Length: 423
Ligand code: GLC
Image 1 (cartoon, helix red, strand yellow):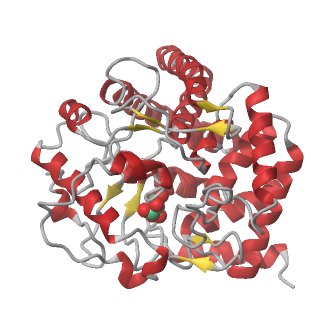
Image 2 (image 1 turned 30 degrees about the vertical axis):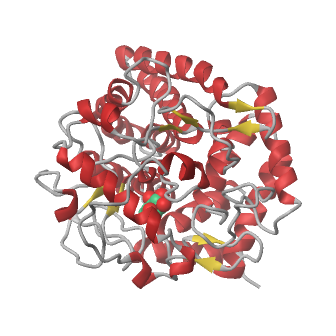
């Protein structure tokens, strides 16, 4: 039987193995660079054994923030031909190459958590004070570039921005993205992982079509929102932004930065109110809105459960908890990334059903705050069972627990550290 100590030691081993000194790769081979939200969530696990190292992880990411305020989804610190699309395809012209899109802004949440649990408060305050204005600029960038009409909610312009690459949420809007005129390419992900667990070729063509469009516009964010045929308002992404703005405001208050506090509190309040327009009574959860058509998207995914991570009304959190319980009757392990009641559910294909520990972590955090302790405990138990049975995988088949995608995965290990410490 695996003990808690063994699990923790194993998690530590995975985190150390993927540590490149000032940043951590998600896993060797498949993802050889720094990813945005991977790093922020990984820092939480790192803070359990080395607080200084945890701050460095986030500082390294923000050292590559764009002049307009965007924080890119990948920083290509070193050369590697094992990943596609690499720096030549993005061609963003940054001093250290980066991708040209962003990822869920979980940094505000992570930094507050690092500060709250810091044992050396003076050092934590020093490092937080330097990061706060940068995170604030990133939030400001979102509202300026991704919410040009001031709805209070921001759109993603590429599925990779959501961090849920091939979710069923994007299928309909993706139909509008052409598949012709793409430069010839060879995928690398399918050389490291089973192609049956990865996005399809048609999806990949469209991912690249969007990259080519944005590149042809010189990565000028002031132009991309209007130009993109794909723009979707994702409740999960927005919940993360709202939660980070709330946390940034609280921390800014504590550190004597009142302007940052006020701005972020306002964004969070407006966002929370607007988020309710994405509620689906039929599914008992939130759903996406296609900003190109204005219609709600008929797709019940985990992105619509994630709003509990923000301070949504208690009644909504309660409904989401009931939805998770309903899903739990149809799967063995929580939380599937898509509703098992939907015929489009594909148990092993990436974000079209598999369970991901980072999602479990954020949803558990929100459910606990809303007093939904039983469901939260169930998710934690399920997460630790998955690890014990199948190791530190990228994601898991929720019907069988089979490990999928890359192995020895950093943020999975970081989340295990978190779940064990909180248990
Ligand atoms: C995949 C995931 C994304 C993650 C990245 C690195 O692209 O969908 O969320 O950030 O891998 O782990």
